[in-house]
Length: 215
View 1 (cartoon, one colour):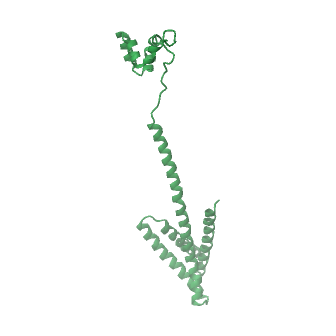
View 2 (cartoon, one colour):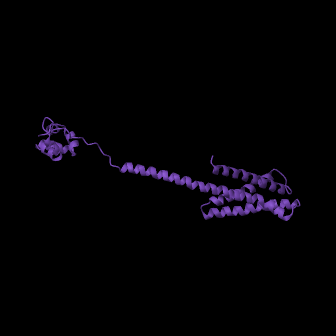
View 3 (cartoon, rainbow, N blue to C red):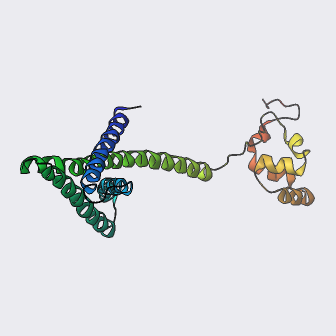
């Protein structure tokens, strides 16, 4: 696990702590008016909605989503902060202290969610860039293999005499001189096989029937 992952994990831990703070404060204030299990759900929804709205705002790609996320920040953040501030005022806290305690949770949730989303967004392009480079390299290699001409090994006439070559099968001669088999067949039937072979393999004219060079 690298340092970035550790920091992101710790950010999530602190976000959870601040959300619990907000949930408990909202519950305690709402319990003055209607105590019951459902009050906990109110605190949970308000506390989490604020953090999620900030996160959505940071990772949004379109103005429409940013507008919705910004509306959520204002609605849930201000509501959570106000309810928590009222709790401290009801319990006799000075105004400045009530504001500080009341706004701490929502602001901390928003800032930490923003930081977590920014770290994630910063890491994602780096991974995407590496994947794109690897994909491009792979495609380039495939294209090079497809475009590269397939070189077939050519038969060698070294050490062969004209008579030996002329006695070979038509396909073997065709492969040796680089023509089609049908052409070799026409040469053979037309009585021009040896002359045509010498045109393409002139070195055969210096090789005697016993495979030695003329002196």
